[in-house]
Amino acid sequence: MPGGRGGGRGRGRGQGRRQGVMNFLRPCLLFLLYRGEGHGYSLLDGLDEFGFRGRGIDPSLVYRALREMEEAGWVASRTGEESQGPQRRVYRILPAGEQHLADWIDNLRRTRDEIDHLVQAYEREIGSR
Amino acid sequence: MPGGRGGGRGRGRGQGRRQGVMNFLRPCLLFLLYRGEGHGYSLLDGLDEFGFRGRGIDPSLVYRALREMEEAGWVASRTGEESQGPQRRVYRILPAGEQHLADWIDNLRRTRDEIDHLVQAYEREIGSR
DNA sequence: TTGTCTATTGACAAAAAGTCAATAGCACCC
DNA sequence: GGGTGCTATTGACTTTTTGTCAATAGACAA
View 1 (spheres, rainbow over the protein chains, first blue to last red):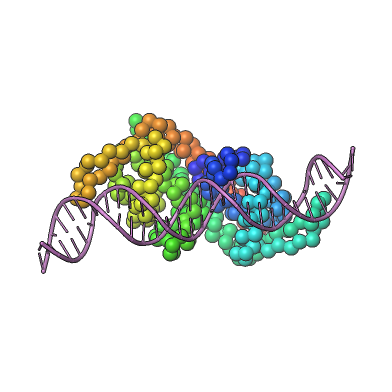
View 2 (view 1 turned 180 degrees about the vertical axis):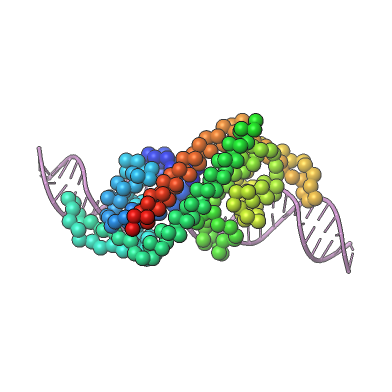
């Protein structure tokens, strides 16, 4: 996603949107859950590995994504785990979510290859000038 | 862009949106113009190379993208070229557009690598189970 | 009580993307 | 001449996606 992986806050309300970032967020979250259950903020921290540096995304976006995936039946949650503040809502992946993740990874491979194709075509064009 | 590169028409008005597709469209168009000027429908056909199969995107989206890039100062157009129908509007890239394309390609490399990172992390996780 | 940190939810608003209508011009056929 | 099909472009309505920030809750410390 061109320009879609930048960090930092937007530039005011609704401007400078990083395109497709939520679209990458969901597979990242699903994968983190694949590795093990977690709650909102712990998953937010885990996103560091995928380019979302230093809580580089608004926490409410994480919660929205988790809620949507739960509504889709890919993950389930329970409340009750103690924390330093309010109780945590802990999410875990479901079999349907694992299947969806596998499909998503396939799509991501395809996407990666298509981006690569454009990059290489550009490099060839540059090299021939 | 997961699921965002599928072909074919959507499934009714506004449903089943292919996410981020316009976001990939613009660098593709800009690259095609980098290789040589063209008009709307010729560029639409040129997109075949990048996964937009068989005019796999609505022509009006191509024209919109071209218009926006012209407003941004990356490309310029002229009318007057004869066709089998109405006159064509032929687009060509400008120096600002070439610079923007170079930046965009850099971003795309980064995006490709970030997607690859997730894919590989998933494969490692699968392999260790 | 106030401040800070963890933790979650929600709603408004802007941006991005999709569909399809409308129009124009040429060639060909009946 | 009128109709059809193809090339070619523009536009507007609608839906979907994404970002910001407000609000609330609970624990702990000063």
